[in-house]
Amino acid sequence: MQKLHFRQYLAITCAFIIVVAFFHQWLLTF
Image 1: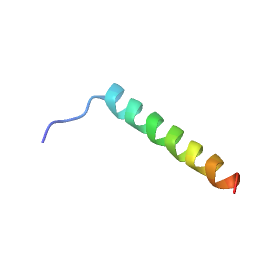
Image 2: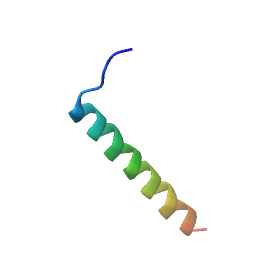
Image 3: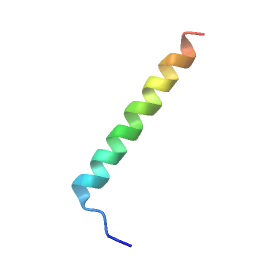
Image 4: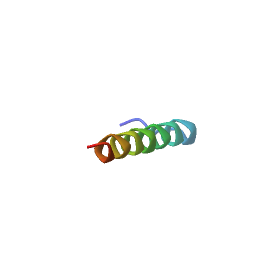
């Protein structure tokens, strides 16, 4: 298993937070 670099880990975390926030906003519209 390859070790993730800190930058890659940070990018994945940020993308996950953005997706969660977007999904949360989408749920609030209904």
